[in-house]
Image (tube, rainbow, N blue to C red):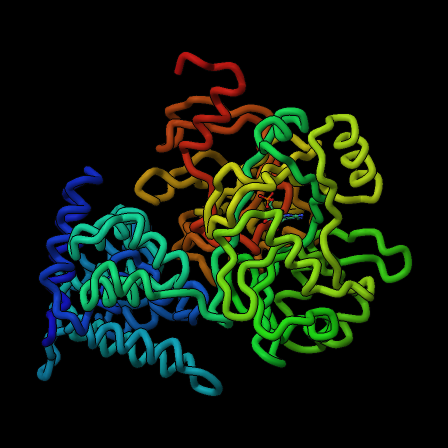
Length: 558
Ligand code: AMP
């Protein structure tokens, strides 16, 4: 059974018109329960706006390519299009208005269907090699030439990752539970273990709670890592953690290592596969892991080849992103990998076991014979003095701080539950997404040199919280500009608006309440600490966290 794309567009409209979470959930539940079964695998993607699961593929379309397609179909010049976007301040609305003004004259236009749209996205993602750009433009143009003005607006917004219908993953999860009459917790667990909303929706429809309970982890399909909470002091962390294990907090990049028989695959914190960029980690893992099939969680750190002291985070990113000259770079910037958790081993899912048990099992699986692949340093203690001396030793060795973990806790996938606290000397920072930037002048001409920052609201939409221009060296300005350039949506004077793609860690002196930005918050003296392109935009800090931090600063009344 087919579904017209206009039906989905109608649902988007209703979702935008109903800001209440409850109503949104009800609208989606009704929609999903009435949707053809064959569409249940793709609808969740089109609703959250994540066309593919994060570990899957990428669409690979930036504003530049999209505008070519819009210009081609509408007959409007790219320049006119960019002007219109500037006036509207929103690419989707600008395209809608252009399509209204310039009705399609295609003789053989066909109604867009949901399947057809998704298939086109799949083809766009698959286009590679010579001529890929042209292929992508052609497929997009075909889509747009069959779209009504409203459909064109939603297609454009989907492609730009700016659907703005206020549906975050949690809301969709609740809607799936309600549509197919299963417990939320069952849906949540199935999502955690499979990381595939489409599969979960389809299974919920076909075989309900029982079917969902049968879904499980697969070696080779990454899981979202458990996240840490900040604690201002070691003392509070130890109190909060119950029976505590203190571990070194290595300042590197999170890696999830999957071993199936003789094959090793490595995934980043964002669940992107990085196996090919890390041949040294792969071979060290092969030597050290004694079990057949496992999923390990750890941190890989760049070290100085001579002193073995940790090197800056930027060095790690250089290796993670690399496609060519991988082996040379591995010699220049060697990695050491520290494993701290075990999620799965030889047919057994271990996330519901205690950390104590998982670590014991881990010790029997990883034989740390080289300095390349080892277990994270750990001390089991609730004694503050012992913990402090461990903390100081970690800092002296050049590490970031310590993690304090509850020995009796399970592994909660993708969650920031209080089972693992980080303690470090640097004050709290925020991870924010860059939503816009300003072209520099004078010495900074040619560089995007000041950045508008956004945090997530409760519906998962981005809100402005400030602008930052300090903390970035000239070399970094050049790097950031290259990174951001493909995501420019439009330019207005010196200001540019960007697709929400790049995450930065930002320090500040104080969080303030201010009407200046649509979040209601502003940052006093913000400074960029570093790029966090190991984090996806789903991990951007929330306004809720900013409110908590604001209160901690001594504003309890608000
Ligand atoms: P943050 O990224 O600041 O929220 O800190 C949490 C991160 O610290 C984790 O995602 C890991 O990448 C990293 N990390 C370093 N050492 C450890 C450790 N021993 N246990 C858990 N996470 C660690």
